[in-house]
Structures are given as C-alpha cells and as structure tokens.
Image 1: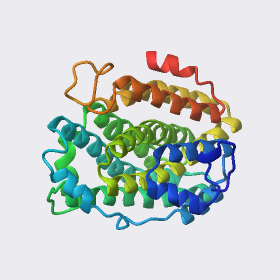
Image 2: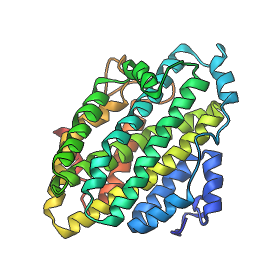
Image 3: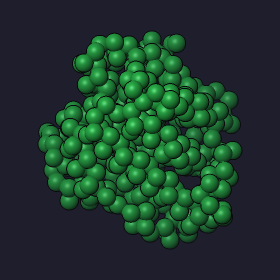
Image 4: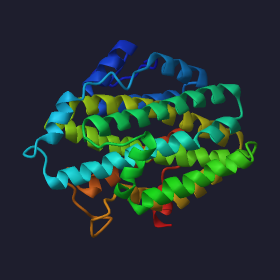
Length: 323
C-alpha cells in the first residue's frame, strides 16, 4: 500500500505484500491497513487506483476442503452450524442489499471523482454477493435456481434488527437520494448509515470475529481467504466514507449534527444486528466462538477511530448508546 507507518511487521509496504496478507487471510492485518487508510485520508483518485490494483475473482478460491469439512458430522457441532449460518446469511443478504441501494448514492455524489469511486464499489458489492452464492452452493450444498432464489432461502436466518437496518433505514436513505440526488444532507445521512455504521462498524467487526475463529480451527480455508478479500474491499469503501464525511464536516459544521443524529438513530438498532435470534439476553450472551462483550467492545472501538478521523468526538457514542 502507498501509505507507510510505524507498526513494524504489520505494515504493508507494497501491493505484493498486501496480496500475500490477503491470501494468508490475516484479518487483523487487513484491519490495520484500514486504520492506515483512515489516517492517511487518501483522495478519491488514490482510492480508485487502489481498487485497480486490488482486483480478485470469485473463482480464485478452492472450496473443496471447505465442502469436505462442512459435510463432516464429527467436525462441526449443530450449535456451531446454526451460528455460522446466522452469520453467513446476514453477510450474504447484506451484500445484496448494499449492491442494490448504492446507485442513488453514486448519482448524488457531488464530484466526478466521488462518482467514479462509488461505481467501483457497486461492482465490488455485486462480486461479494456472487462469492457468497458460490459458497452456499459448493460448500453448504444448498440448491437454488438463481441468486434471488438462494437469497430468499436465507431470509429466515437474519434477525429483526437486520431487517430494520437494511430494509428500513438504509432503503429509506437510498429512496430519499433517488427522489432528490441534490439533497446533500440526505447524502451525508446515507454515507453515515452505509459506510460508517453498516460497513465500518458492523461488517468489518463481524468479519474479523468470523475469520479469526475459522482460522483458529483451520476451518474453511477457501472461504477465509475469499472473505478476507471481501473485507479488504470493505476497508477501501470505509476509507471513502470517512474522507467524504470529514470533508463535509470541514465545509459545514452543520453536517456534524447530521452524523450525530444519524448515529443516535441507528446505533441502538445496529448493535443488535450481532445478536442471534435465539438468545435470551441480547446484551449478554455466549456464542460457540466468543462472548457478546467482545464483539460489542471491538465494534465500539472501531467506530470511535472513524469518528476521530472525521473530526468528531467519540464521546458522542455514550449519548447515542443511551438514546
């Protein structure tokens, strides 16, 4: 990567090293790379160039060992399978939602440079959806006549808060921009929901926990490599969102109030997207892989870093969580 830092062995000095990290599925190095993207605040042009260098194909990953492991009744318990299907499905359906809803954001972007980058993101999100569709077919063994049919079969795996956030709040943001692409306040709200809350706080946090735990068990090597590629893309998207909002806040402090109000609205819903629908206490539960306190704490720290990079006080999160 083009930005250098002082984190020793975790630094990615070249694109070759970045590719090696990708194929090794080291999600913490991907997250470290995101921190450096945020700190460096690269231009939209540089983010576009990064997209050109970081291409991958949904066919790059070998799922044969993944399929063997999923078919082994002695390797993965029923509780583990249920939890993995919950997590996989929330990501799979989420990729479809963000693919569909992003076009009005690109149309409403205030510069050609921002529009160009957002068109690359639409392509990325579609690729992520196809990656999950292939995984469901070749590893989980689920048959479907189309991607839409496959998605429909997974709807019962997501929770109510996922539906409220993606089908409600995100869809409303996209509809407002579709009706009036010149409404900059709606764009600020939408970028906050899409890039900061959904991608930067939920998706990257959830991915980190999924990938780390799969690697610790040596499960699904093809998926972990591919899912890390997905999240390197997401890191780039979040870098765009942080830069866009930082610039908007510098241009007009009123935009900071829009971000704050959006966080107050969405965070009480978004935090519960992590919660499996079968647990008794949504704020204190155990999964087969981690305790809820770990993922809540990590997501809060991740969001705090982004707010600080945008010029906002992370202390606002206390008020948002109590709203």
